[in-house]
Amino acid sequence: MVSRVSAAMTRRPWRTGPSGPRPVAAAGPRYPVGMSEPDSVDRHIAHWSRELSDLDPQIEGIFTRMQMLVKVLRRTKDRWLAAGGLKHWEFQVLHHLVAAGPPYRATPSLLAEWLDTHPATMTNRLDRLEQSGYVDRVPDPGDRRRLLVALTPAGRAIWQERMDDGGLEEQALLAPLDPGDRELLDDLLRRMVRAAEADGPPLMPDWPSGSDTENRMSNRGTDG
Amino acid sequence: MVSRVSAAMTRRPWRTGPSGPRPVAAAGPRYPVGMSEPDSVDRHIAHWSRELSDLDPQIEGIFTRMQMLVKVLRRTKDRWLAAGGLKHWEFQVLHHLVAAGPPYRATPSLLAEWLDTHPATMTNRLDRLEQSGYVDRVPDPGDRRRLLVALTPAGRAIWQERMDDGGLEEQALLAPLDPGDRELLDDLLRRMVRAAEADGPPLMPDWPSGSDTENRMSNRGTDG
DNA sequence: TGCATATATTTCGATTTCGTAGTAACTTCG
DNA sequence: CGAAGTTACTACGAAATCGAAATATATGCA
Figure 1 (tube, rainbow over the protein chains, first blue to last red):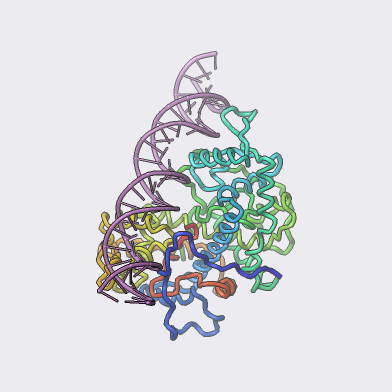
Figure 2 (spheres, rainbow over the protein chains, first blue to last red):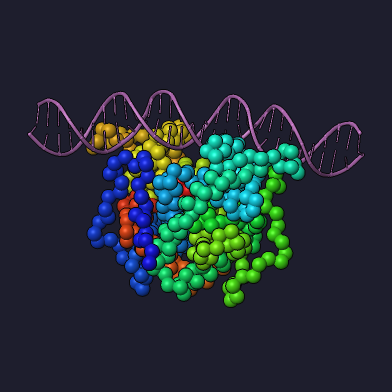
């Protein structure tokens, strides 16, 4: 129904040669019975617990797995975007502008905040994005300190183009879970998010533009 | 039992003023019935689906939540480390050296790969880490091209210090889940990871050093 | 109104990271 | 053995990012 998971943790540009980790010995340690087939995270943790005993393998496992899954997704999207000649942050800017809804504008400061980057960096990036013709900078009539970054038709077009078939990896990653499993997973995660939000601000910008279908193509920061 | 979730998505250094997103209108859209209390991700997606209709809110929700959770964790750790005068990558290097097990050494190339960074960047970082006295560079007797980066007692000490009470945030995030929920969550995630690994290399380095209690204190890359 | 303070964006210099190439050492194979 | 190819690390210049200051505008309050 959906493409298989694209070669998961693919090589990074600077991975020079076969310097990577060697295959693990055939007869490894035992894992808790009743657990489904172990994955590389289990093996990892099993090894690690030799070095550090007071560590909860379950907690460890949960967060490591989330991190790994987020990482694969991010890398896959990066490659996918790069193939279309876009950098991740370029797509992100366009994406957030679309997410903002008509008239598809936002100030540089908000964009900087959404992309988790320094305002000066955003200035630089917007310069380049403007040169590429994907955005315009128009004055804000209501406040002459401000600018509004506006999505151009070209920007909208290239965003759309990359967006169309952008959700494949997510579906591939979720393939082993049936509808019931997915609902369960979503619910468990929601409970964690709500707990995190109980003590502080929302994890996502709670306003017209915060967006994130983003996640259908990229993640917002996660790593910044 | 455990500290509350530390003010979730805390301010970044460059967040200048109250320019952030404004509070959302009181009467929002409706969400699927039977769902537990909505979180900011639900609101986000509800908003987004106006702009882009052909999108599965569930898939969207699952990955967005993972991304957000990973992001909070990462930021909390960053702050925590910074308070102790360590940068994230500094801790990561020390952590991976410990994870490698006795005699706590690794080559620059492997470290670069583990931390998802360019080898030249690692050279630079190791210079600084060596100056701080946390690592030494010793020649590899077996291969005179190679160096071995060795953990010094000072390096081990500062790692230990930061490690001791480093697992609090994870526990706080998992607080709303009882033991059964956690097992379920871990299992669902494991199935996803295994699926991802079926088509490609393991998501984690499968060898003596790949480590990751890392996750107890920091995440390996995720954001690179 | 007038002045102090706050906000939005950009500029500029310093730092960090990256890509590429250089040097040394190892390996393969004739 | 010796030449060609590969791998490991680093040096160097280019590019991106950051922190702090500069500029212009807006807001608050006496």
